[in-house]
Image 1: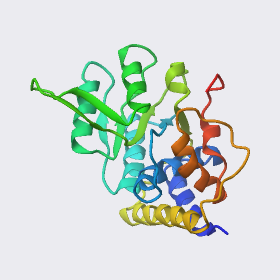
Image 2: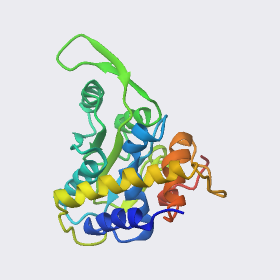
Image 3: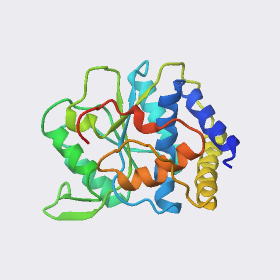
Length: 239
């Protein structure tokens, strides 16, 4: 049987970040589990984008994203702004082996949409190293976060790959100790799921392109008693 205390600790972190809706909290917890699942649960393949929506201010959204990155990775996110420099910034992130990349907003059109989709759907990234004539190709499989204060619909190619996290409460600025406790709870939740024989939950709808993520992070979280985080994907077209 799952240990309810692990899920409770992670849910408390979500609440301290102003995330109170059960579905949004499940998506936020899934974000926290994602980098750890690569380290200890054999997660391979791409992972979805987690979109922090309706933060009171842009600064709040960035602080919430930074807190999730710290809880998941014990280090901050690499920030990237969609636009002409996005590909170069992602190349830098790949060179550094970054565990978390955060987008300062989510574009609804333009070349940045295709750049982000390419990064989300592949395990490797290739690009020119900024300021040089050299090119780079290597792994880029971070935790993907983005921030928005808009409820405008995303581009369909992004929407189908995005889990929305609605920040509908006050930000309480969790302490370093609380972030550390959430990190340990995430590790313990994944370990408990593995010790239980990696049980699978039937009846989860397909989430095309993220089969490896669904088989680890999603299965572990639903087993622990959370609602299915994929229901936070508002896209209802073909997977």
